[in-house]
Image 1 (cartoon, rainbow, N blue to C red):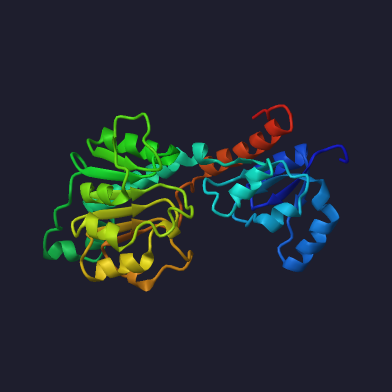
Image 2: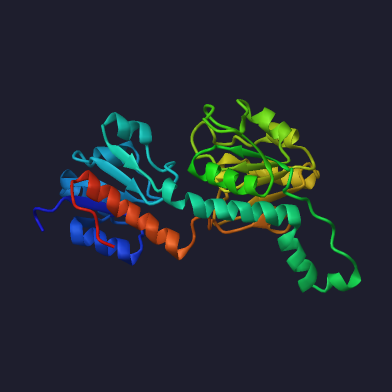
Amino acid sequence: MSNRVSILKAAILPEKTTAELTARFHVHELPQDASSRDEFFHAFGPEIRGIAVRKTYIDRAFIDGLPRLEIIASYSAGLENVDVAYAQSRGIRITNTSHILAEEVANLGLGLVLSLTRGIVAGHAFVQTGRWERGSFPLGRSVRGMRVGIVGLGHIGAALALRLEMLGARIAYTGPRPKDVDYTFHADILSLARWSEVLVLTCPLTPETRGLIGREVIECLGPQGYLVNIARGGVADERVLIEALASNSIAGLALDVFQGEPHVPEALRADPRVVLTPHIGSGTVETRLRMGDAVVDALSAHFGLPPVER
């Protein structure tokens, strides 16, 4: 055991992933309470060389407590819980699983777009409550020919764009820089919102994107526009979204992520124009296992261990 690389498991991971890590590394579990963490860092911090993380905050003080740290392997796509700039300044490698979960999150994104435009969730309630017997369900909107703007054309955004394009949607996007794709690039989020009938958020949560979707964006999207958020709750100002619903300044919302999740404001939960899912973008058995595999593989490759036979 003593000659194995010591890593810190700072996440709840699938049993299979934990077993694979334990078979390859000297795994330390991160204590949950602050006082125990102080003792832990004093006793074991100097030997930790890698971290498997999901939601735990890895800030400057955390990193400074691990002087031999070489790699942070994140089980999720987002890195908003990691002080990326400081870690990189220390020469610490950072990996995530965005390339693994992109297809699954894009599938959910497509489902949410269709739920909004075709009224799938509202239609279910319409039948379930017996209202169909008293009249016809309102007509929906067709994705074919619809202008869909994607905020952040990374792994997830690109996978969603491909799916929507196959259904006949017209795609445009915004991000830090243009990419070598056939979709129209908008350098300004307001320009993209004015063009879009559906605006889908797939960008990471960074200081630049926090609160990106505010009143100006909603005004540009307009009362016939739809907003879908499969990124992070902090990208959109929920107070603005609630105001837009109250003033009929938006046609509908589909949200998989929230600012204070699992708390979701009553105004969002009660509005029939809103489709809500409980942050399930990557939430399938198969994808979560593959994400765990990616964490093991990243740590193994970094420390020169042979690939896991699966």
